[in-house]
Length: 379
Ligand SMILES: Cc1ncc(COP(=O)(O)O)c(C=O)c1O
Image (cartoon, rainbow, N blue to C red; front, side, top):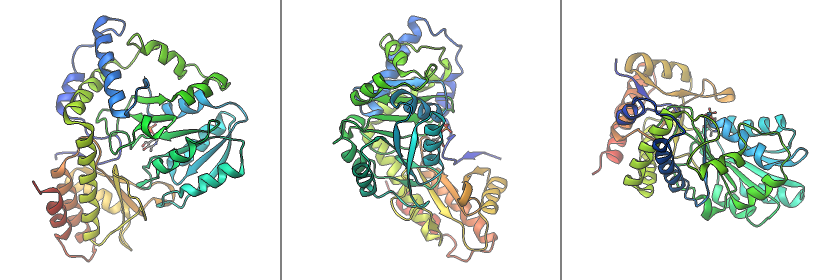
């Protein structure tokens, strides 16, 4: 059976990129690698929309999250964490592991944070040194208002904004320099359409000032070392050479397609998916501000999401993601990041209709596929 991957990471990798990565390995301390790395640096700055350096780390996204904390904060500092899902919780756990005090803004799963809560918290407690958030909270399929929050933090020299853009960078506009985000992290297995294994991070001038006073332990993820070596088109430690070669190829394609078109492509896929899900009679888990990266659908009453997920896998070879923690069994999540195109979405919607009908869900069979085709099949 043909296999389809609709999980919000890892995502499918285009064949041409797989072939690039299958080439004989070259050594990383060579002119050949430096040439590739120069292209990667340039391409990442393009996607991050920044003049700052973007570091390439050999880790999954969480490594870059850890690096963001370890490089900017100090023991005893207080951080304000937007916790509206699994990945918001992760910020809290990382901060606590490093001895950073945490104040949480708890957001109901499925909802976006109200920026006024951040404004008020910063006003009330001048000892807060950082705001940490997800631009797209993958566990709930919600986008938090990064632009509005950045407008608050940029007014303060003593507060930085650390953004998890792991399912945001390359999906929707998140211009690092323009918004004045201070640390932005991303990962290879999302919109970059690569296998897992690379994470990316960028720091603003304000964040570098924080770096100077930061006393948290750092070695492998010491961004100062990455900055120094990046200027020589290399990395402090042995990089995953094949992934970096794949990344160079992806970034070349990205430049050819253009960031605006890439963002638009994702927005159209998201809209087609959402409207189709609603036409099937399902609710979106995101009450407001659904993410452009993925769609989280609530399974109908009496039908566990696990049955939908296994039906898709067993009958159609399609893997979608389930919910985590409190959303487990209640939702299923369809990614539209990276190498997913219009026909993929039309196919998964059609398969969802078949599975749901056979599980006893009552709806206008075919309405979702029709809606997806109307939106995504247009020239
Ligand atoms: C928003 C977000 N943050 C963090 C992570 C964690 O990244 P990783 O699993 O690559 O460490 C993910 C992964 O799904 C994510 O979607």
